[in-house]
Image (cartoon, rainbow, N blue to C red):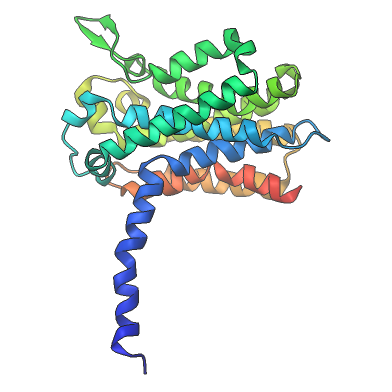
Length: 292
């Protein structure tokens, strides 16, 4: 028979595991990891070139920087958490997120300068500007200042465009290869990320509706938004098939993404979105790297 101490151990461990999970998910470490793994997989587009770990580290640091800067915006911490464990966690840990963003900025700055990325500044500056100004309300429109994300239906296309351009474009630049050689991968990743951003728009439906942000769920309703997301997923999988993506990776990615899209509801827990929806981004990249 187990002793009282051994029975109590899992109970005592659960809060610690929960805190670690919250920290990894809500600080965007998990999402930055997905961007890093996708970047590593993109290098395999040009065999026999190996994976450039410094570029992968740059993408990881830059993703942490962008998402944590967004999380610590002053006006976001004046908004009520409204039952969101993610937002409540970020509000409680605002200083820690600011420190993490600062550390990520130092790391990204080091790789950017040490590896000569400033030579590509004309190509990178628009992407950097869009990523950093995504949530800042700097443009006056219809009587008040609005962020780029508030342009009707632009939010998902903007995220997908920046994400795919960084995770595919940076490996191409690092290898001095034309991006045209990876247009199929670029299109596939764009369509997959766009499908998943609609899932997060479903999560934010009430908030976006109240703010007047016209996303797919606001305009078409949840059912219509899911239909659009599934259409973009079909486009992504078509490009994957045309590129000769391994059937196992293609099938698992399709099933995982379709399940997340169909199950998405505004009332779902933060773990559904942060762990599972973001986790779909890891599936094809991890399988591709392991398969090689």
